[in-house]
Image (cartoon, rainbow, N blue to C red; front, top):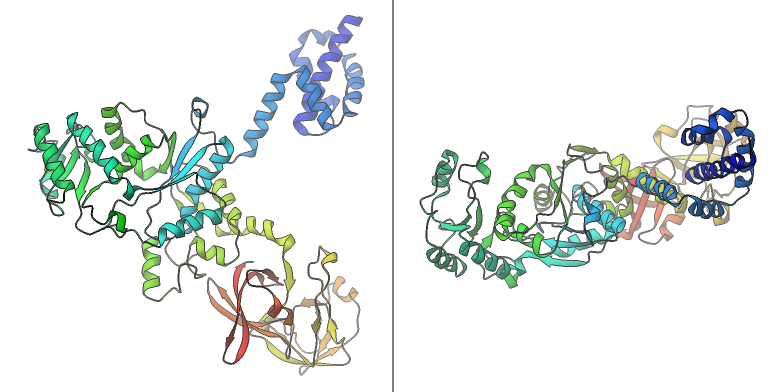
Length: 576
């Protein structure tokens, strides 16, 4: 091997060593780079017995660099290959696929368009979780647009507007803008007038049954060929409230023989007699259908990408007719399947939950039995855990199952290290102590953080144990933080054995509370309230503080209250 070839081998070996080291964030390895090195340089093969020795010396020098030095050197030698590695790394970091044609837009703009008929249930979190994540990923923009143009069938709940924004904040997102469609009626009217003048819409007084028969037969409505002036006049009468509900509609003129009957001359505006609950919109009687309102808004607000359910595929097709009339470009559309949620007896439906609350079967939207974001928040589950679980579902067109255990696992990762431990005994049985046990137990606040200190739990004359933890006579147990005891059938006698009896596997470790100085706790769970008693220090915890009740699970302290003359703590069960 001459000097010139050796220099070439060294240059190529250095590049491949750096590529290997930077990609894997570790030291380069001769065996790992030989294949790529020889593949890119087939002329080296006749010197195959010499190449490893030359490459080995280069790799030794590369491995002496810090990661930052390796990356900087690679940027000098092979900037395009470095960019490819970093692009691959970035792709690997994302559960969500790239947005279609994202690089064709100066700014990614998306919308979350809730119907404000109640606070959000858990399934609603998917849309803001994914849109908010895309916004962060592309440094884009997203708005909340309340699609509240149905004051009758999907009547808005006046408290839901703020409740939904609170839910969005809980998930960790702040919209760039907030709109209410019910504030934008005049905008929709103007576009309807323009559409009429183009010959793209007509007023129709057919009954629903009459039009359905014509539509299904592919026959035009008798009102379809009205002159523009008549249509404009009748539409203005609609706006002025001259018609009652069901008397007149405005239809978009499409293809009356379209193979999909759902797309034939669909309704854009209808009359609704029920006043809108918002005072600002209460005088309007002529209301746009969602496909018209949403289609116009998506264009005017500059949406580049829309995510909607697979069941709404016809919406895009209906709106495309309007976009064609106005010569607008339709946004990119992603359709996804529905989320199926486990672990709840209550149907994941806003109307169902609302009805249960009205009937008194649920205490409210934050009842632990309700599959709502307000419930998860009150239970102490972080919004970030929900977002992570929703993003992990991706954007598949198939229906997907969301296990609550996924949210619990993500939340556990967020809270475990910072959450102190406490004892809580459910419906305990009182058992006297005998012998001479320590007067006080001092278990750690957290087993992994000795610096946080210990709890002081007086033992007293008796303890409370859960029924399943009471041993049979003459068997021993270890009361955590207190010591080893043998059950006589009447009492727990302190034996003085050291912790080796636990390590040897002969003695179970049991949580407990003092019978006299423990505090009553009502633990609210998805399966109903659980009553028990906790170690004394629980009474001093602040509301909203999280604890882990050992061998029970995480809980959020909700409040301390007086009941039946006694002080008690109310906590909400978070998860195991």
